[in-house]
Amino acid sequence: AQSVTQLGSHVSVSEGALVLLRCNYSSSVPPYLFWYVQYPNQGLQLLLKYTTGATLVKGINGFEAEFKKSETSFHLTKPSAHMSDAAEYFCAVSRGSGGYQKVTFGTGTKLQVIP
Amino acid sequence: EAGVAQSPRYKIIEKRQSVAFWCNPISGHATLYWYQQILGQGPKLLIQFQNNGVVDDSQLPKDRFSAERLKGVDSTLKIQPAKLEDSAVYLCAIEILETYEQYFGPGTRLTVT
Image 1 (cartoon, chains in turn red, brown):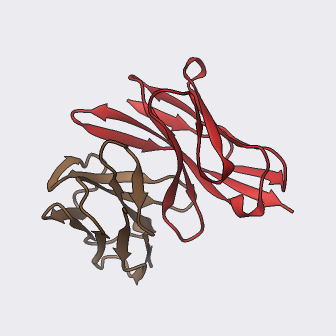
Image 2 (cartoon, helix red, strand yellow):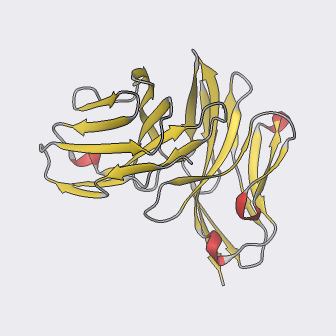
Image 3 (spheres, chains in turn blue, red):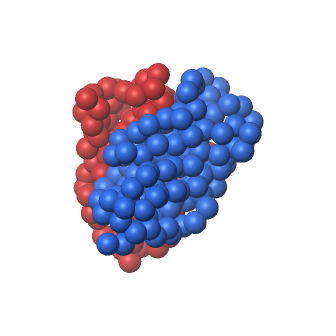
């Protein structure tokens, strides 16, 4: 079984401030980890992913995330928030099961950027 | 390039009516997903196809929901009859082989009154 917990359904930051969105996961096997962003009335778009290798991964729009196995975390950060970052962010975990990938999404964190 | 078209974008029906959604990936991908996203929640997997076959439909309410994938490309999701609690956005996604990345369509927003 696997699960994803996103702490904080709503996060507000000032423009130019650090963005930190938290994600913790549980998985019985080493998972693949993803962050997706969803803008209003749109589908989800991949921000970044961790599969193997370097634990600090960089994605689009200046976002990055660090896989910490000991903490079972995959928090998303961005040094300086921009107004265009206002959206909903979803963490997801994927693991192989019976020859295919089983994916579970978190409940999402809505990011508000205050001018 | 991976792209996923969905139609219709919006649909309003009354409870007990039937509705169908279409998913048309631009290029062929083995794995296709249907998700239900209720307002304020994350996507919940309804059904996962590998080519034409179903690999996971454990969360699909099979008494009212059905889905099929024709020739390993396009897919349809049907609800018959609809309930008020089916109001949600229905997302279709494909998985890029060996990258495990999913590409999502824009979704169909269903309102059941």
